[in-house]
Image 1 (tube, one colour):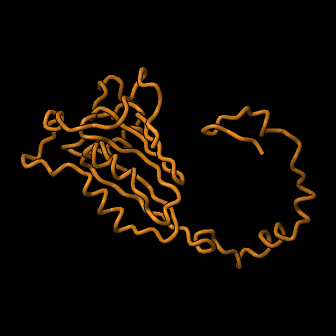
Image 2 (tube, rainbow, N blue to C red):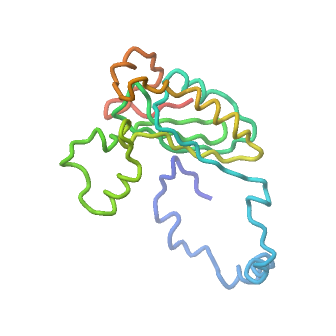
Image 3 (cartoon, rainbow, N blue to C red):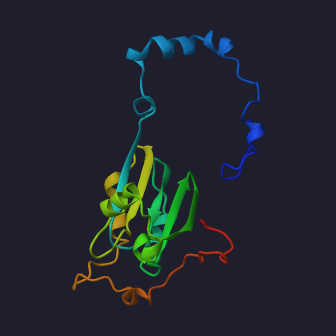
Length: 199
């Protein structure tokens, strides 16, 4: 067993260690059962009652509301992760990671809609992915968070996240100046930010 911090581990600790013996493993009854009893295999989703859902939205989160959401406890929620954006930081794509009682947020970088066009990818596959996520008002900015757990109240989480979104702009335009005065409790992101937020 190797303890890690955010998955950082020397490769020599886990690769080519000589600790795995395939011949010995093949004699274990559970190995045989998995290989030859595929028809009886019970997926982990059924075995442990694990389910997941993805929350998607285009409008930005009100920072104070989303920070409060992250402080809440959701019965049955085991893991959540994905990317999001805040109304006060329209240029930042951010990530959220929840594992048990630990929540972490950090800035990832710019959305394509905020990057100079000369820095946009020029290969066809990347351009196609950009176009798939493009919105005439919000560009490629979006909320996309996956929630994983046992008997999680999906409706309650979706409703709580919807309540974190800014109102639909009456004029159908995105103007970041409208949200400049909102209170933003998240730590600074970027090179001089001193790390990610932790809750």
